[in-house]
Structure formats: structure tokens, C-alpha cells
Length: 98
Image 1 (spheres, rainbow, N blue to C red):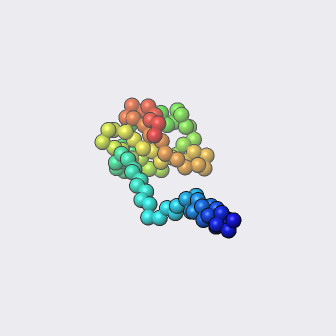
Image 2 (cartoon, one colour):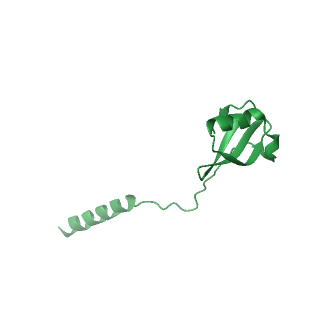
Image 3 (cartoon, rainbow, N blue to C red):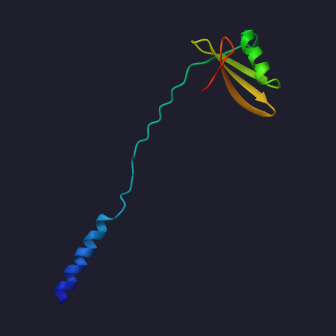
């Protein structure tokens, strides 16, 4: 009878070691960021189509900085109603979702 209890204790004890949660140490997380290269331009260099589209869509917007990439796409840092954000537009004044 003692052998049965001893055998049952050993079997149950060995099963609990398989249920343990393995610790994750030394894992590597890679982050890849794809971003178009924008270079800062003067506000006077913005095409009139972009400034007209901004006035039409966001009449109270104030442009703080403007950027341009190789594809002639523009990134605008704007402030509207106390909130700051970025807008993206093509040279013809159409808005781009990014």
C-alpha cells in the first residue's frame, strides 16, 4: 500500500513540472520603420494648390513647418484649434492618407 501512495506521489509530482510556464528571457524584438525622407522647405515654397486646399479644408489651420520628399509629396505640420498634427498632400493639393 505504501508503494502505491509513493508511486502516485512521484507520478503526480512529475506531471506538475510539465505544466510550469517557461520564462522568456533574451527574446529579440525587431522593429522596422519605413518612412519617406522629407526635407524641410520654406513655407513660401509650398505650391498654391496645397495652400488653397488647406484653406478650403481647414480654414483656421496655421502651418508651422513644411516638408517635401522626392515624390513631390508634402508634409505639413499644422495647428488647428489648439491641436497639432500632420497633413500630407500631393503637389496638386489632393490629401494623402498616411
